[in-house]
Length: 363
Ligand code: GCU
Image (tube, rainbow, N blue to C red; front, side):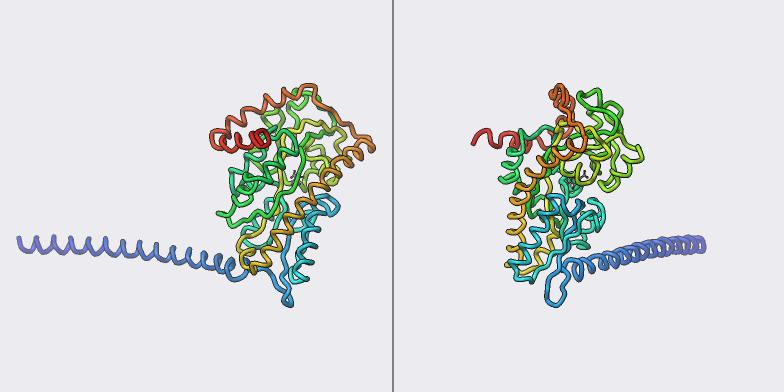
């Protein structure tokens, strides 16, 4: 009996030890995994804090890199260069901003990601791509939201605009200023568009944005998401039937020589921002931060003046080169058709949309 009890006790003890041992090795495996993760994290955060969140310095001069995807002569690029010159002048050459145009540092999605981790200091990009960092920014690109360009600027220059400039701080991104990007219109290779049914089934390139995919498919076309840099070759190879953009980009990117039909449907206005890695900005002396912020705001005023002139000039240039501009037979057809996108987004952002609509009506 005693022997049996002792054997049972021993077996119990053996199992207890086994359980403890396997629990021990399980916890030590967990600890190792955690340590491995921590070491990766510290490598990453090491890069962020020790290197990438400080700007480059050469002979005491601060070097900041600004990425942009337009050609150097595009009004937006010209304004970025103006911004860089202002900063250089006001800092007496202490801060040198290198502007990289024509996507020299990568497409918009990539440069925004790099900027977030400090690989690039600043980016000028479309808000359509910034919704990855704050989905609420989608409200600013809703179709037929603004009555006109002035209305959009009243919104961006006011409380709502300021709120959205700061709305990506959780992701370490600081909005410095707004740039105009006009109204976006469809352009096509083989077919004039004058009514909704003309768009049906056409393969239309859109920005890398779920919202733009939804919008263009609501209008009956087949949206094809791709970076801006690929549009020219995809048109040339007839992989897509058309795309949509503002007139200065349409002409400057030479899409106008491939797609001779432009329809003024103005389905959306998507503003742009110059954004900066927040840690890099805050690592600078307060006076330098002020110089950068102020110069960005002034470049925004300069950019919108330039924009208006360039829009006019480019409509004319496109027509002179043989392009055809059409108007919609019935704009309300388009406006009605895209209403479901409001139903999709308004429950989330309805309040801001109502406030945007009210801007300029009451004051
Ligand atoms: C606009 C904008 C670009 C954007 C492009 C696009 O032209 O200026 O920043 O990349 O649209 O359609 O992708």
